[in-house]
Image (cartoon, rainbow, N blue to C red; front, side):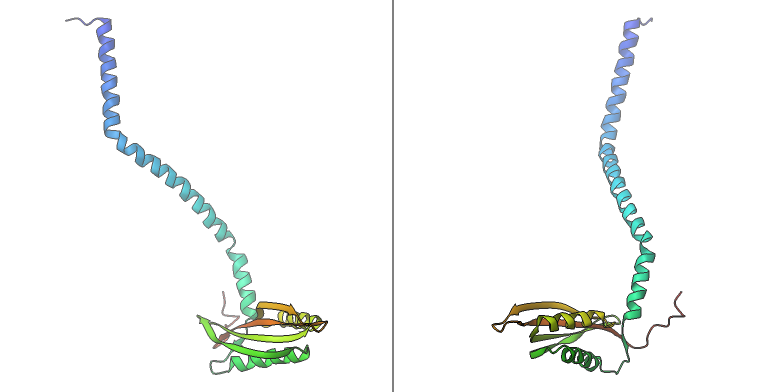
Length: 182
């Protein structure tokens, strides 16, 4: 039996079609998986870039953390930090002639070895006195911060009144040993 050229070509074409059909039939489910894997690969590559960026910044953040820890006041476990905070705040207030009508102390909050005290004041004074008070509060070296402030004018020219929340951050226990750090 001899096959003509036409029959050979048709046979090859039929074989190729059957081969492609079988490949599609068995491989179609894997095509979607490959597309998903390719999309995940792109997402993971972006996440790796971000992680490498943050790792490159680690020494910078570590240095900033060490600077803040050096500024952080340390109080003994039984030492009354609230009294120390209120005394410092009262001295600043008297130095700049701010009048306090009402005050409310907020409970001490803690996160690990970091503690925070807050006090809310309703005050009265001049623009100069509040500006100098806020400047000394920030420049004092302690981690005291005016977290909320509201100011309104009074009928008296040059007089202002408002509310102010001052927070104080500190740690308790033994201060970290500077020489033991790596």
